[in-house]
Length: 128
Image (tube, rainbow, N blue to C red; front, top):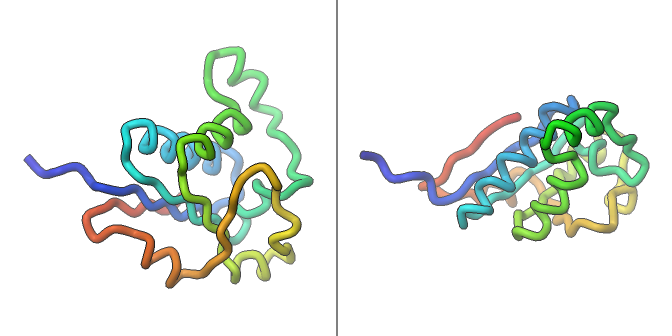
């Protein structure tokens, strides 16, 4: 039987709420079982982290069904020490600066080299 990956590295590319929500859920799950996780936000996905990002209209219905909301997942990831990286190129591409991002989560600004150096040769990499 193959060994499980020792780290989860997620490239969050899509600005679609469901995809960003799923990336947060995956990272939180990995961290909850003591598997290090990194979320690398780039392009339109970065908008989900902006201070002025509108909450999803789907969150109340999900919460009513016992599904974690975006805010709950984001807080869980932060509490579980998931590493948040924001792509420098992606910020420029969508016209944002790191000062436009939320203050309640520690973000590291970097590029592909930083992300790839953070990944593990024995880990899993996912593009969402």
